[in-house]
Image (spheres, rainbow, N blue to C red):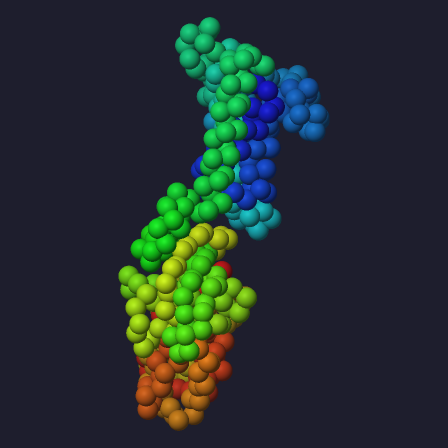
Length: 350
């Protein structure tokens, strides 16, 4: 099979399986599709890895060991070990395994087939009729290459907009659309909301992109500024006192990969600052937000000044302090000297 066909098929399947349009990830997956042919020295992979290809070429037939399930297992162990050690991102490890596997699976359709279950000598080939199998450089292969490239472009077009659901939701421009994107991707991808509307307090027009932190109800979201992560707003489609932005149109897209973790922290008449400091040490560089209530010993010492036009992340009633998606660094500044009792939900975004 031609080099271009291997690249196209492996790139297509990497994009399809990972839902990615990242050019680096897709390039890795496409190139990984050439690696099974390292068992012959004249292939692109063989020329680059000449010592390995010459060793394999002298000892093994073409499309045997490197074109098998065993090879996929070995490659997976190697790349996921590198990902575990932090040498490469996990998504790159996924791309290598997917690209490599589909790089040799396409050779099932060639006349000689592959030793899929190596070290067994049985050669697997599809279809059974020899006349229907592919020959390198044949018209059938060029047809498959054209179809693979067309499909890859279609998948890329969808993935750049966050998937089919995201594409339809952008067209519909409804809060329900954002909810569906959050449900599908919220724990692993940053959700970007394009908000068109007005600020409730002064009716100034708003047309901005925000990161979506959480959904409060079917029509209400907590969002943060993409440049200033501690710039928080509550956005809703209904005119309510709690909303800072009244949305007329809100659409969502899927952004960069993230990891989201939820945990709770409880105080029983103990130092609040100690556990907040522990969160700071455990999650350096992460976005950390706290939601909950704490009864403190000296409420009058908690002096929170609300930011103009933004979400009030801290509300005090006597000695009771209510945190509302409060950034961790803000909570530390207000409560580090306090003792108290209460519980908060901690949302950590890396």
